[in-house]
Length: 378
Image 1 (tube, rainbow, N blue to C red):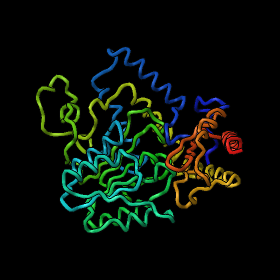
Image 2 (cartoon, rainbow, N blue to C red; image 1 turned 30 degrees about the vertical axis):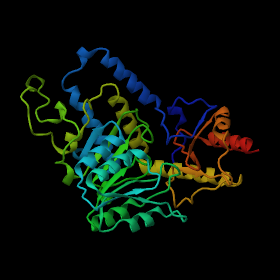
Image 3 (tube, helix red, strand yellow; image 1 turned 60 degrees about the horizontal axis):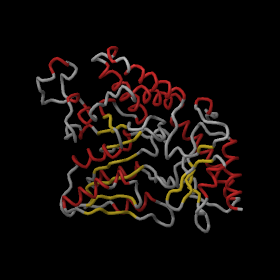
Image 4 (cartoon, helix red, strand yellow; image 1 turned 135 degrees about the horizontal axis):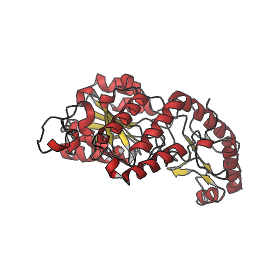
């Protein structure tokens, strides 16, 4: 269990920010790194050609450690949708085949597959959420001999309903289907091991649970997929790109590994230092330790919420860092405003009041949340 890390963040004592699944706050160290990066860009004569390559490799290696990958397997992307678009461009899909998605999945891992299915005269199969909450079972049932692609999250973005990616990965490989994962809502707070799950592509934005800047993200590309086509053709992805004087000696060959899929201007001098600081902090805390701590926090919130007549998915059905509270007669229309007036920040997603704390939360935040809920429901 990790004690509260509130002292590392600029969060006033009268604010209970329980909304990390919406936007993760930047820690003081990340803010300082970002300000230092802006100061450096103010003096561009101090930026060398080597600087276009050094920090990208540091960031790539740090993210690789979080998911147990090689840095060679990691591309730097600006958003989850960018990585999903790379996957959609490269994965074969033919007439009559299917793409398996989850009901009410986040749209960044939906729209590309709809477009690909339309172009190929294939079919999108949307798996409905079952009454018993067992998402893994219904997804496994939906994967069959027609399935070409399985595109899923690790947990549902509304209430954290959890999928067993190991079992789904095994079944996908048995039937020759490719696996594409958007783990934006779990990366950095749930243990993830691509050596065990073995996805073809895995993408994550960094502005939520990785507590990094907006417009930053990473994509894991399995070794057998690394000779694919990028969705843009930038100079930096080619061999010899470190030789600025020779850039017009155009090269067909790409840098090794997944680097061909890097977004243009990935050596972002404003955001990379901040992103590196955020990734280093996550690794210092330890993802398993973060997961245990946040799961315990939400179990306590769920127990107290049950005394108000609110229920949620069982702890074994959801990711520990997520809690979706359900109201017997639906969420009151004025609830969010009432909570905000009390200094409590959460989200409504679907039919759930989404509670998503991180290590900066403490017992006083939970007390503030419960007091505000009691007042709003009175």
